[in-house]
Amino acid sequence: MRKTVLNAEHIRLGGRMVDFAGWHMPVQYTGVIEEHQNVRKNVGLFDVSHMGEIIVSGAKSLETLQWLTSNDVSVLNIGQAQYSLLLNAQGGMVDDIIVYCLEKNQKYLVCVNASNVEKDFKWMSENNKGAEIINESDLWAQVAVQGPKAENLMAQVFGEEIRKVKYFEFLKVTRGGGTWYLARTGYTGEDGFEIFVPIQQAVGFWQELLEKGRDLGVMPIGLGARDTLRTEMKYSLYGNEITAETSALEAGLGWVIKFGKGPFIGKQALEAQKGMLKSRLIGFKMIDKGIPRHDYPLISFDNIEIGRVTSGTMSPSLSEPIGIGYVKKDWAAEGKEFFVQIRGRNARAHVVKTPFVNPRADS
Amino acid sequence: MAEIQVPAELMYTKDHEWAQIDDNLVSVGITEYAQDALGEVVYVELPEEGQKVSQNEPFGVVESVKAVSDLFAPVSGTVVEVNDMLMDQPGNVNDDPYGDGWLIRIEMDSEKELATLMTAQDYEKLTKK
Picture 1 (spheres, rainbow over the protein chains, first blue to last red):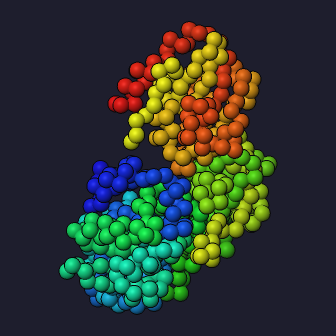
Picture 2: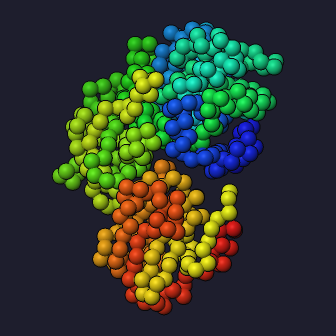
Picture 3: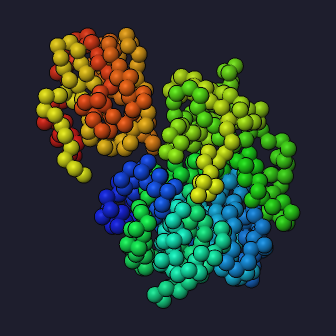
């Protein structure tokens, strides 16, 4: 199993280690619920070093990324980032990614999911339009600092200028001779940052955050709470909501598909789907007792399967079960009711507005 | 990890249930080791009173935030009592696995099945593997 450079820190902090996509990662330290709530209330640190970093550079970098990704990379200026997708020719999703503009028209960093690094690198290389594409995943650690007090913690480490960085922008800084990227992004719904740090500097940085964040109530956060936090926001997870077989449009990701920008992989397939979508990704809550879980069937009241649960959990913020799933479009409107089949028992559920929580609005 | 308690007077299954035998009545719960491995229990699904259960077969589930785990009956018999308090306070399984966190009581069909359960000593060895 692969270990991130912070592995010994997790063990020292009492992390319960599990195999996640071939990586030895902490699923929790003190408990999923406590960690979850600490991110909603204070600030939490996540080791996301297992995620991949692929650099696309050269005179053909923009042209290549326009072809490879669904969003419009040409609108990005230096210091800006965008959520995007790698699509296959059928309009299914190879991965969801973030593209960071390091030098306009010259150099971009693509952050990809841990389980997909090799697959994405191969896919990008095979569909390359003349850029230099390098997998730098072994050079970078990545730490997410998330929560309403994330900005204060980051300011203590990096100074006041960090407060000016807007959502989906990033700052390039030089620290200890290394180049770091401080991006105002995250996967929790809270304010926060994701920091790309050279691996040899990551342990010192992690310890500094724990030390300087003590008065702010900082806690290390495992993968368990990472999943409940993103589920409450109805953020998609590769392998659950996002797969090679699911349509980006049905996933509700039409906002990162820019049909007007020119040709890109998957464009024709998605154009043909427009207005013809069979299913929608929705959020639901339970009327009857039970917790929805990945792959449980969703059944209409006249006993026809209308979809599947993609993610489900007990929501630590709401103390009630929540679920995400694809349903046939006739069942996608708010208030629509259906059954979740839980171990052979039909439990009623209804479609609700998402996100399930609105953390930024509360703070 | 703090010292895991394995009360000497109980019997155990390899699936981490405990059984307290009181004549032909068997109280059932999950062990401290099991609750610790599961994490915070947020939902418990138990059979109805009067339902039949079979040894080593699932009789319910316990769910943590992350995962669903089957509960296995240590003996065959009829469910005569269910800990309904767990519907509202599933966390009792974590806080007091051998007390308020008990799950069901079974009226057992045959005492012979008890011979297949593990002693505290054997169970403790299993958890330290």
